Length: 125
Image (cartoon, rainbow, N blue to C red; front, side):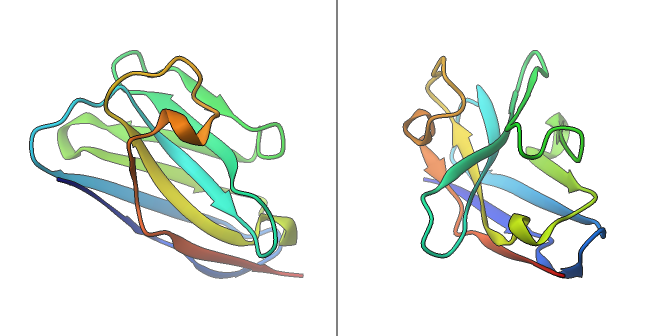
């Protein structure tokens, strides 16, 4: 089995920054893409960002483009999400995801085989 463990969430004031980390471990697995989704109370889970593992191509939701940066560390099987200029509407549980069987569309939840348990990000106004 593959485990995804997120860290770095917390409480921050609007305009502040947080850096989320997600480490993948477990049995041997392929990594075609890793990324982040988020879910706010009463809302559907939404795509935030993803990175193709081999090419390094990055993808962002329009709502975070220019403020969030995704990166990966191949040697550590870790993906990061640097979140700057945070807004109250960024408040959500953030989930790390891993695509181990290759899917073309990175923004769909169904494209990911593994999900972390989530880390809470709260942005106060």
